[in-house]
Picture 1 (cartoon, each protein chain N blue to C red):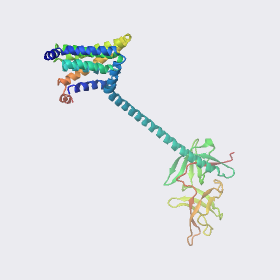
Picture 2 (picture 1 turned 180 degrees about the vertical axis):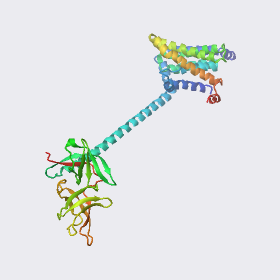
Picture 3 (picture 1 turned 120 degrees about the horizontal axis):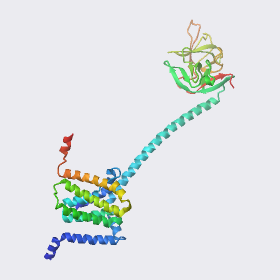
Length: 161
Length: 263
């Protein structure tokens, strides 16, 4: 029964790929749900769970392009390991540190994938899609942490109006 | 076995990493078999429900778009159908009129009614032809059923027709059977009557009333109506005769102005 939440996380990633990504895209820029989920699982779950979730998330996400599947698995697994290692050494209470981790992971993932897909158009893709996508993902991550830490609550939102 | 379990538990992270490394190597090295299998399995389990949902929504959106487009097309087709039906009715009326032989020396000019002027009943009609089409004052106006009235005013592109139902209108008419002559007028509240018939005039209900040709406005022989009822009071010198007009003035549409001296 412990794996059911992780399967739901995988479904969340594929839901974003199939439907949510297009609906939430702003001028063609999408947030990176895949890396976001891997990072969040690494931040909040145990060591083995994070590593295996990274492996399966990479496998599921990589099934869209079979040539990139091993790379996605390696990147996601390494992301999970690195984030897990870092999370034990940083001030975990700080939202900024968690947001920086997410931003860095998304940035590194997207840079590596661009280099693998089309290195010649690196600068165009980097400026047009990667950087705005990182900002978009970081904003959503920040909102998630604010809600999870109880800094944004329904009562506070209601009080604004 | 206990020490093996302890070793595995203490180094489970490295075992996991080792196992993952082996799996990644297998996936990398067997691009033709394992990778497509895993890809298909993943697509079937994790992507298929959402892609199917997305495709269904897209299909429904297309159906909705088609429905909207077809509704518009149906409305346009319906309008065209109505226009064609009206054109067919007009064509039918014109064909009926083709059999009509206008009085000698007159040529009918088809005109359309732009508006009808009412005073409890239609009393005048504005038509779409004027002096530019040789329309002149006092030219008779008919339709396929009979006499309608005469041109009262003419402008460059319009003209006003005084209908027989105008109380100020009067037509010299005769009973077709007995040749008795009288004046046809419309009396509000009473209806169309033929006046000035002597008490001993020979006529009966159903007799045809036509224009007499006297007075110089209307040519003779145009149908005005049928005798609807006759009343003779003792001591009076005139008969009271009510007519049923040949033309239903509430339903007039195409009219014809009879122009004289044109070929």
